[in-house]
Length: 130
Image (cartoon, rainbow, N blue to C red; front, side):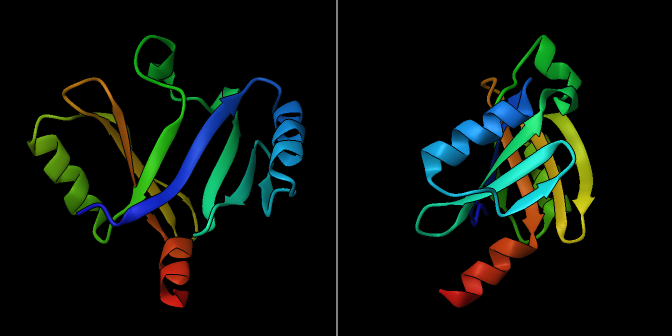
């Protein structure tokens, strides 16, 4: 059911410093930027690495699982989300539209791990080029 990694996000209190540090480390500027968010293309399949202002960190991250969330592209986000809940996962973040073509959701598996799922137009586009 998981098709491939779409986006991994890290949170930073000082977003500009984090963007600068990763730009230096990766040797490339972010390809996408909006207030509170920067995104880089990384690796052979141009996976997305995002930096998010800590002000947008999910509330549960303060007292439970949190930090980086890896999102996996799925063909049917609602059905996958429901299936995970049926298997005993608990909702971490509800299904949320992030922008045109970008919808995410995440659960905590029965072992305490955060699993992100996503419908991502970039993933489908890149897959079509391979």
